[in-house]
Length: 137
Length: 93
Image 1 (cartoon, rainbow over the protein chains, first blue to last red):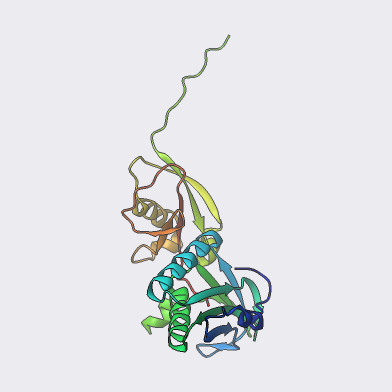
Image 2 (cartoon, rainbow over the protein chains, first blue to last red):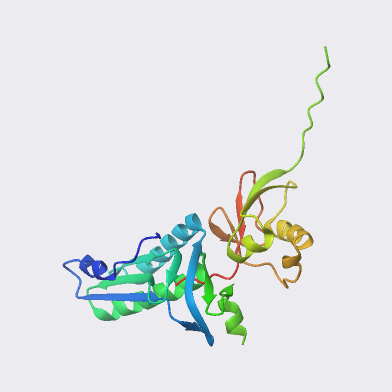
């Protein structure tokens, strides 16, 4: 996790010679959420726990897919529309495991890793995003 | 010569409590040291916060909590020096 921009292209060069597939997911900041026009997002993390939680996540993925190597990069701080906030790289001998591990990594990251985001709206207001509230709708 | 004051021994353990994101804004602090009774559990600290912090009074149940960087339930026993955090709904990605 860091404040610097994510270089998604650089992630593509991480494949090992035994890898036949490289799957990269990049999450970017978009210009609306739940019907409200947004201008940016600020990310905050419980840094030490987030690192530990990502470590546990990667260990669990390695159990499920021993041949897949996964890397996760998450950006923190204030981001603008179009900025990459997260990147997940999964490399594997074959594409099926690469896709599956990449998907599992981002899905679990969103529910377990202690990172929060505050959305800034075009009308000047801001609010913390609560995915559990959306799920109750 | 003044007599030394009797030293006061307090029962209990001191834990560090962390607040992030909306909880940081609602409590107006990012961390604090709290003394809790010997044998206190995570749920006991939450019960105290519900009494102290108006924002927490409306919560129907304890939010996810972590002790020493790992998720922990309300029954988790607290020890001296533990780092405890109550976590607002996570929203990474």
